[in-house]
Structures are given as structure tokens and as C-alpha cells.
Image (cartoon, rainbow, N blue to C red):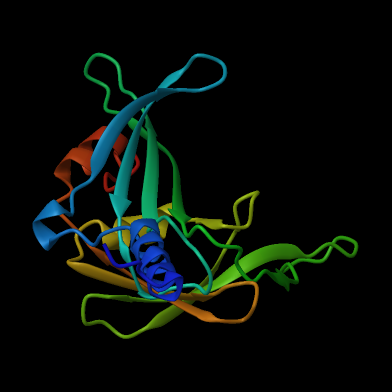
Length: 190
């Protein structure tokens, strides 16, 4: 048996490790809201809906997770429907934080925000500022914005990471009546 040069084995080992860290892209038929039942620290149950997206322009370095929309809803009881609790965009890498001056100044406080640009289907690109999550790798999605996307086909979001690199994400939006029903997101207030 001939000995194999060590230099030939090392690149093969690194190539196999590199592919195992990447999350495989699933076919478009796999784009569905995944529902799970969770409980808060106080023991209150809630439903969590998760929709995975994909990076069109990924962050630098190793990001093992894909971007995701996460929607939490308090369950309904009897004939009462569930109620929207929170929505977040999970990005998985530290985001650039802008400190925005409030509209009405009371002292010297500024609000941390993540600047995002988004396009829903073929509409014109729009810009907004969302609140960052406590770990600065996620952003809180406003309920009004969530109402816009639930009936969309495609949503593209662009933001900057903490190094100033552009991140581009795309979400293929599935049919969402189960989410709308469970969270009463699209229902007008009565």
C-alpha cells in the first residue's frame, strides 16, 4: 500500500468540515410556518411560529443558522382567538446599531435601532428602523409590518452587520391562514 502524502489529506478534511457547517437550502415546497408549543418562565403557554429564510449575501465568518421570522402568540380560550405577542427577525450575527434621537427629547437618551431596507414582492424598496434584540443578533418586527408580509409571496430584507457588511435575506412566504388565525394579526381591533 502506498502512503498518501499528508498535504493531500489536509485540504480534503477542511473541505468536508466547511460544508457540514452550512445549512442546506431546502426546496421552495419546504417553506412553511413551523409551529411549536412553548411555556413562559411563569408557566403561561404560547404558540411559536418559525419561518426559515436564506441569505442572498451572507455574513462574513461562520454563521451556522439561516435567518428566520419568529412569531409568538398567546393562545385563545373558548371562542376567543389567540393574540399576537411578539415578532422577531433572527439573523444570527451581531448587527450594526444606530442610536436614534427620539421625536420628543426628555434628557439625553437615544434609542438603539437597526436600519433595514425591505422589498415585498415587486413593490418599491422601503426603509425602517427596528429595535434590536438584547443580544443584537435579532430585531423586533413591528406588528404593522408583519401584517404587510403575511400575504406576500417574497420578502427581501437588507441590513448591515456590526462590521458594516451588507446582509441580504430572502423569505419565500407560504400561505399563512394558520398564523393569522392563531395570532389575530390581520384582524381589525373591535
